[in-house]
Image (cartoon, rainbow, N blue to C red; front, side, top):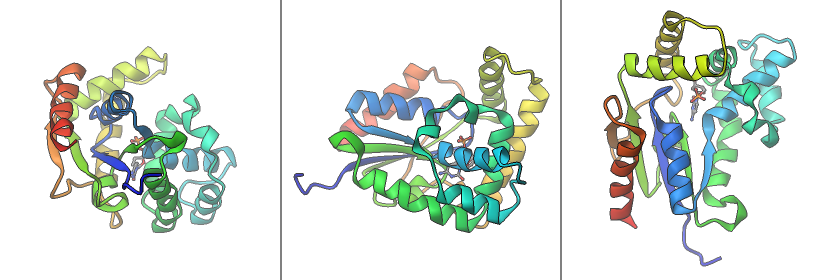
Amino acid sequence: MTGQPAFVVAIDGPAASGKGTLARKIAEHYGLAHLDTGALYRAVAFKVLENGANPEDLEAALAASAALDADLLQSEALRTDQVGKAASVVAAMPEVRAAILDYQRNFATNPPAGLRGAVLDGRDIGTVVCPDARVKFFITATVDARTDRRFKELADRGLPVTRDEVKQDLVARDRRDAERDISPLRQDAHAHLLDTTKLSIEAAFAAVRAIIDETL
Ligand code: DC
């Protein structure tokens, strides 16, 4: 240990804005650990559903968040729309957020495998989880652009949904994430705003790299 604080990059934004792809690319390029914090809420929701409980049931959600299984975070089973919807319900519970906060902060301050820092992506990373992050981004795109991306992703995986269903779902989830009382989705005052509606992944990545390089 050098005693240097970890280099933390915070990335927030709505669903299907491109933040997850950018977070992975940043982690790979700069040799940082990556935590998709949405997967934590998805893992809690998945466990609740697996136990046959209702995602609105606070006790069931709390029990699932206390027994968070790190191995589950990479599972494809978290990537369904049903789990995403249930995740936004459990994510509105302050008790669930508190249980998950320590896990996220610990990951940011003590990145695994001795890496020098971490990239965390989610909804409240720059505002609540890592307010002292070295670089913060708020990644966004229009609802239609995000619908097209999510629809393609689900269709490519053979999941039977219509574009209209995907759009309705995104709009409902945006509303729940942005209007909840605790840690709502919002841009931190120090976050760099990037609208990816008309950008390729490479162009978006070049834009974030230019900003990170300035702070290194
Ligand atoms: O990004 P995602 O679709 O995997 O996130 C799933 C849900 O988790 C989403 O509806 C909002 C919630 N979430 C959150 O409230 N805070 C985070 N830091 C990350 C995700």
